[in-house]
Amino acid sequence: MTENIPEGYKPLKRSGGFLSSVGPWYYRRDEKNQMALAIRIEDRHCNIRHIAHGGFLVAMLDTALGIVISNSREPPQPIVTVSLTTNFVSSAEPGDWVEARVTIDRMGNRLAYASCQLVCGERVIMTGTGVFALMKPVEVRESSDG
Image (cartoon, rainbow, N blue to C red; front, side, top):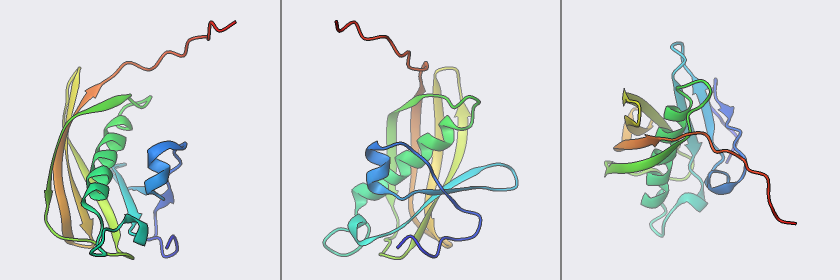
């Protein structure tokens, strides 16, 4: 179901891990350079009722918040989720294009606050807010294994 990607969206290149297993992810930047992320819902994203699984939608919202916050700084800021609040409003089905619209509400020295809506067209699927801890870049250390 990766065909029919709306104009302006590009594949999000992320290396391996969890993000690869739930994608493919797409992103675009608007005229204000704001980033939006999206996924085309596939059967594998669905529950037994054949609608997008709630856990998948929560993961999508958390990921979108994190990527947008991280990429709001140059170089990208390493972060971790501290708190996440979500509200299910509607459902999404296979074939639906679900876009995450993120607003950064506040960036402090140690914490970032943001809100997000997952939408299919103009229909809101989920709303949520998150608090993220701003982390220091990971230092790669040489292995002492002999």
